[in-house]
Length: 72
Image 1 (cartoon, rainbow, N blue to C red):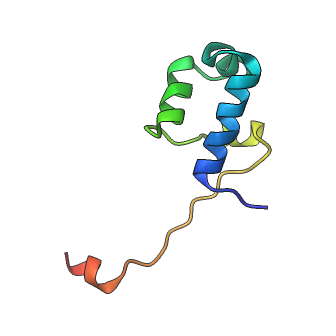
Image 2: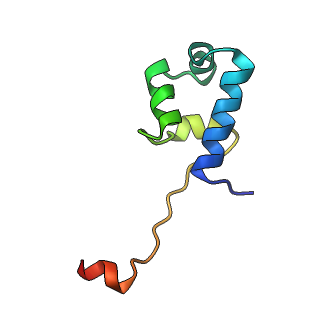
């Protein structure tokens, strides 16, 4: 089953709750606490390695641009 970026962030937030702090969750995910914070805030993408630790693989999908947006 595919999940959205938002759902993946929810899974990461659940890990933070389970661990009791962002610092411990970052250690569990083998990333820096700053990077973890940026992921949760939506400022940085979830890396391939973090996605794998969540049990997923990261896939980027590009959708067509509606005609009115192409000219704007």
